[in-house]
Every structure is written in C-alpha cells, then in structure tokens.
Length: 252
Image 1: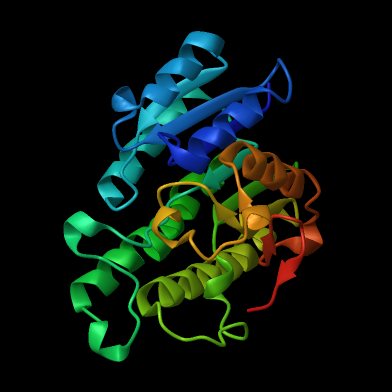
Image 2: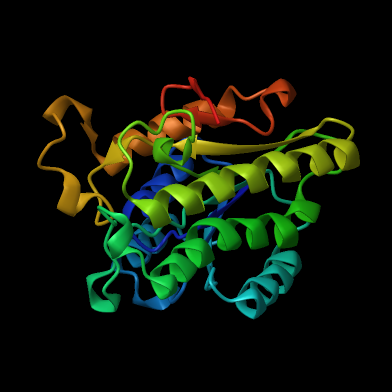
C-alpha cells in the first residue's frame, strides 16, 4: 500500500492534497499531520469517509524541532516506509501577530523575519531531516515542499515582501542542498523538490486575490490534482529543482 505523509493537512491545500491522494486509488494510505488534527473539521470529514488504515493523523508543529522529532517516532511506529512526503507549511501573513508582507525597507521587523524563516525554511528542513530515512531504501521516493515563485531571485523584478521572498529562497536552497545528499545516500532513487502551486483560493492568498485574474485563481482541489500530477512525473534528474503547478521549472 503506497503511503503519503502530508504535513499541514488540517486545512487549505494540505487538506485538499489528502483528499486528492485518497481518491487516486483504493489501496493507498495517507498520514496527515497538523498542529492539532483533532480540531480539523476537514480531517474529521475525510476520516468518516475513508477511515483507517487509509487515513490516519499525527500531531506535528513544524516550528518545533521537538514536535517534528516526536512525530517522526510515531510515524515510524505506524509504517515501515513512506513513498511521498509533502510539506505544505507556508506563512505569508498573520494579522494576529502583526505579520504582513513588507512594501519597503522600513517595514522590516526582526521578529517577523524570524517567524517567516521558522515556518517557510526551517520547518521544511526539519521535515527532510527527520523523515528522509523512511523513504524506500532502493526504490523511488519523493520529498516535496510547497514553495513559491517569489522565492526565485532571478525572477524578482518587483521588490517588497522581504520576509516571504527571502525565506522561500532559503527553502529552495535547502531543497537543493538536501537533494545532493539524498541522491548520494539513495544512489539516485530519492527525489527532493520544491513545488509552486500557483495562486490558490486559501487563507494564505485571500487578502491578495483582488488583482489576480479569475482564470489564475485555482480552487484547492484543482491545485492539489495539478501538484500530484507533477509529483507523479518527476524523475531523478529533477531532484533539487523547483517546479510550478504545470510542471515547468522555476529558475533560482
């Protein structure tokens, strides 16, 4: 039974990915993680429909190394291997914490930068560190982290959004660096990539959708299917790169 681990599955695109994976075939298993999975109505609905062993959940706070390590131990007791690991963490804004994309240098705040890096860069790095050894030993295995086109340095022609741009660029560098080590360890079987889902109709993008053409705003279910298609078509030569939802590479 192929097994997916999906981090950030309590809502939004992570939850949509869980549903899309479960709908691909009957003999598939999803381990969904969220900070507090018992409080996710979406996961509860999926659990009613699919049940164990097709869907199980584990608590994981991606900003806490102790939490990620603890979740790794639990997942390791639940299964022998993971075929695909998808990290969906992303922080662009948090009004309660006063985090908002910066328009100018004067908007930069050290605490906001630190929180953005904790979620967007350090979190995915911890996921790779603790879960890579559950990938198949001598077969194809994939670790994918949701990234963003604005993390591309060469594509930055507008400026602003310092914390989000920089933390996503750092995430992409971590993906590339980890891919080199994983390729050596697995003799080319393991693929480590970043994925840009486009603009998805979730809480992350909601305040910024006014200037997005309707044809470019994807429903979570649609975006999830696109991303799974990209994952399905990845080859070992793709490791270390970042791809958009249509499978086109994004330059660093």
